[in-house]
Length: 86
Ligand SMILES: [Zn+2]
View (cartoon, rainbow, N blue to C red):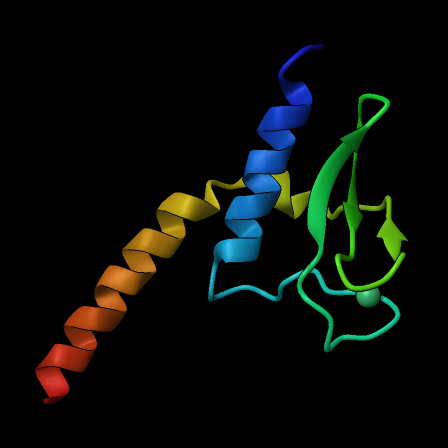
């Protein structure tokens, strides 16, 4: 099971770094920073760095797609589009 948590954390970070999806945010205050994945007792949970909010329920969709790759493609298209307009 070793490494599974790290893989999950990586995917969550990819999701949280993607500009094109709804980021996972604090349940206490949506103005807080986006939630950070941490591994506790072999379980990955999300925590808020600004308060003690914790979320154990992580949407499956985050683990199903390679968002880092998609995000790069979309950014590339976005930039191309922007250059075309200037
Ligand atoms: Zn918070």
